[in-house]
Image 1: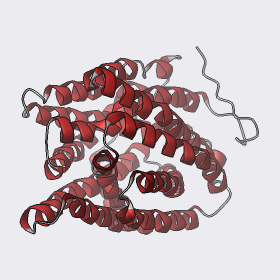
Image 2 (image 1 turned 90 degrees about the horizontal axis):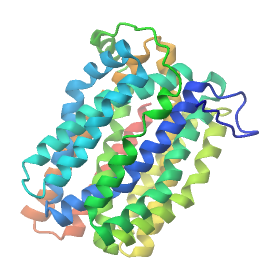
Image 3 (image 1 turned 30 degrees about the vertical axis):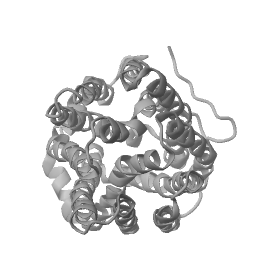
Image 4 (image 1 turned 180 degrees about the horizontal axis):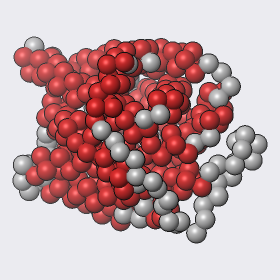
Length: 392
């Protein structure tokens, strides 16, 4: 099968086969992820009865493992090819879901779950970023990445709704099984044609050199620490306010639909405008949205905050990613830069998990403030982390 992606009048030139195949793979993988990802922290909170600090620290374990093993993932991608590295990552994602669900019986199995999740990331992301850097066309890199991001948003429209429906009516195990079956097929588009790959040596010293020459960029990527709160605390807060898997799924689905179309427009203007200026504007707007969450105490204001957050993330993430891929290409060390990028953001997420767990414990446990007050402190923390993107 030959994947030929078309979007008339949007792209300046035909999208290369490798990028078209990546679009198809991302659509399958992200649809599977969207079915359960919003419910994973809710599962830990409502089913396993884990507190917010423990949820944050378990996710922090993933990024500690990721930081340690990402250079190994870079070597795998450099030796065996980007598509093969992504293929190798798939069993670890599924093992993560298996042991996450098994954590109901023995909480200690959660440590294995989040360990496997870290290995999955180490094999997937260096290969993904290197593939986009190598094969995206220079003059339309922003548009090509924005389509990838729009695909993620589009499947995220159906995913949470389906996941909420399955979890509410058949149990969350059904959602995990359904997601695993779909995710297992995500490698197929990448091997529609035989991967042509010339092994290139990668040494971690190349990444260390980037830390020495680009310290501010590393600090900027640590801004992704805000995502530790976005992906693991915000869904629990939504669940507390609106109550019920299905209601959470519907709210996130509609909010995603509101924000999706904007990502394509942002990708187009990213190719024709100053990416640095767009990034700064997007970062300021996105940081302000974190403060708006302080007012989100009803289902309607939660919906507004989530929709605005997704819009702000588009404005921030698309120019940020386009700049990252351009710098990776200019460095002539594609895998080394991918490892630098991912390891830096992982340091940000790990530090955010530790700080967030400590702050939530202090506010709700030591000082005795309400659960909502603990959430609000973490939203402020995330807003401050997001300002680090200004260093990029």
